[in-house]
Length: 365
Image 1 (cartoon, rainbow, N blue to C red):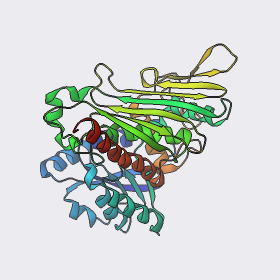
Image 2: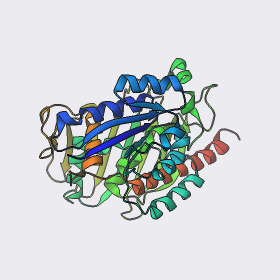
Image 3: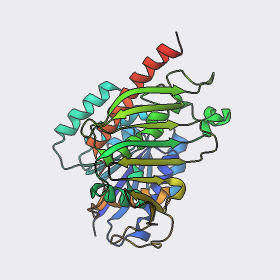
Image 4: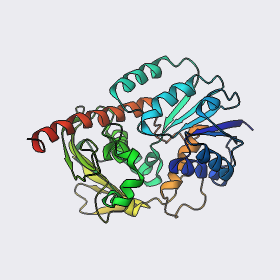
């Protein structure tokens, strides 16, 4: 059995989720490599040492020490957004690294985006890079995408996607997450949450989406004006002419963790909500009724654990994303490679530009 030595760059909350998902792989899948938790690196000594001890990593290292660790073959990049690009370059220069899992957003500026495109084109070694858009591996989303791409609903006409939280309404919550309140595209709702929504829309509609306009709402004295708490995009798909809206919010009260997608086409419609994640719905024009397509945690033939009828959940999709990352053993999976990550980043970056125009016109004048 293949053995892969893993290193984490980052020891925060998302790193804990990845550690859980990686250690859970063996419960869901038979054909997986043996994973060795080699090293975790982060800026704070106490954080990385505590993380290593709690989650079974052999060593806790500085980033410099990590970069010289000759055992590491797979790197998970999970630090602050503004170090993702530097950490990607670091990982690509490590001689034994063959796998890189890069959390979104992939970078934090236009300069980094352009440099990353060159990296993507120039990587000579056989390195697999996957970007952390776990929602693409939610079982109902996967099945809905297959149904949409079958062409049964016809040409898209318009669409709507929402990704809403309400946590940042609380001052104490904002205070604990100051690093996420940096101005877009490094921080803000569109970079943090909306990037998942952009990824989903691109998976269904293609990566050529364009922004027509943008809106920004919500303001607090402790939040920089350039950090969007709520933002909404008007989007156009130049390939089909379909238009629609995508909004991301940190201040939508009572929503919990809401992802809601609606696609309307000439021959029908499709919708999915994370509040009812065990199914998606579709409507065929002329039928007179919506059909509820139950999916549950159905990843067959890849796996049927714990059971196909169990609701999938956010962490379950992350587990499957790791399975796809290390084995490639799911031909139906949408692969969120670096090219996809950069397509999403283009929209995130252009959002910041459109929001700046909006603020200048409606808030400063």
